[in-house]
Length: 68
Image (cartoon, rainbow, N blue to C red; front, side):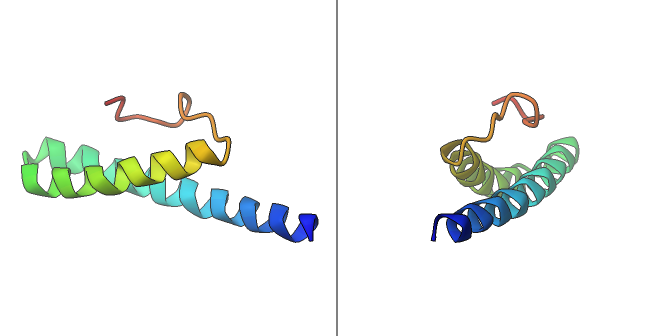
């Protein structure tokens, strides 16, 4: 059962990292375009993904380009 949990955690981490990268890309674009409402909505997702990845043991310092 532990092997199955590790595979699932690995898949969750991989998907979370992909989503986190995409959210950051969109946040950077929204900030550049001064789309404050869009940025705020993305930030909610960003915080959730950051919390999820941190709880799974991912070190955020290297991958977090937003730094808020």
